[in-house]
Image (cartoon, rainbow, N blue to C red; front, side, top):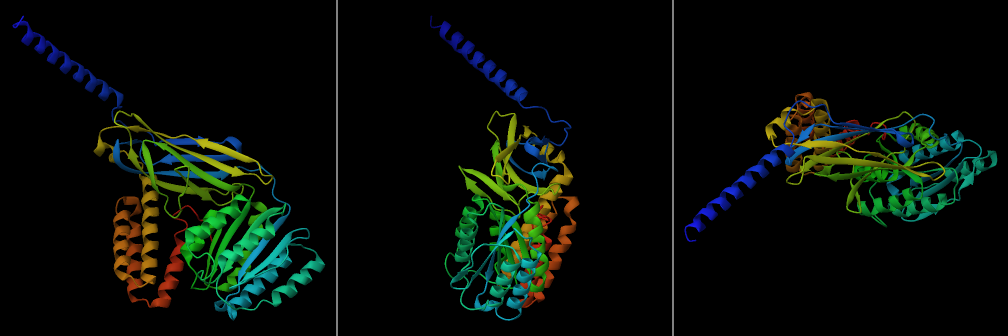
Length: 454
């Protein structure tokens, strides 16, 4: 019996080794071999919205792979009819800093808007400084136009900048409107009274947006907070405007009126639902988290005008996973309040060859991703320079340069980095502001938001 025990131990050890070997083989079989693969693309056209999702990497490692997914969202022609009537609330900053040419140009632009609107449209004029003056929402006619023109002429600049009170007054003015609703915020400064923290102000806009009102945020002059207004317009589904020349406001309000009539898909949300990868950021956009999942709020959709979204992900697949799911769902609301959803599933293959993963990436999608990341770092750098933090600005530009260097197709961005660096070093405070706002307008295209800003 004693002689049998070592023999049994040997058999047990051999059996265990065999099981482990088989398990290893099965594990290797579970993971597909690395070979040439097409760029993963998913397409959904249900409910009249076309969504195409394209990944920069056809395969990813279980962890450590950073990749991009580019979403192209397009409302198809004839899905829902164009709005015949619009209800607009103009929320105009009349704080002391607006005194002079800026307020003169703003009054002229609002006068022009009144004349361009059709009979039957509705307009509410809200002005704010430290306090709010809220006119009633009126239906446009020859008589009401005369009243509105007289009201516009009485606007006088005074007080601080209570943006939140102006927004809330605009919401109240539109809450019972049955036409397509649009709130247009016009400000030349940063909030100094009421709610001043940017995410709290975004929450105010979110409440307005949930009530089926689109919010556009227009900055005029050179002292407004561009980051804040961009966040407000994004959360509100509207446009963002960087208008150093207030005289351009007349043209922009004309475009807003057209957009209000043409935008037939509202409250547009792109919801990310992933297994095996974690969303890290969406350059030029803000993640708003709901139920522990990131939500991106997109501008109202107009027929055949595409919206592009880039999202950076990090792979985080479970140990034996062969597939990572990078799904998205688009939700939007029709003019009559019907909520529609379109889901676009996207699967990536998980492999163990880390070096091979990078060799197989799709260069055009990857280049657009790193270009967007680089542009976001350049914007942050310009903001730092404007605030006098040259060290941080230079560091962010170094990071941007490194990002552009990750793809041969994006190398041109390195020249732009050095151009910004040289100009910021030589510029005074006023010129740095101008450079910053000019860069904000220019980089909208890098973020796929060329149809969302002025």
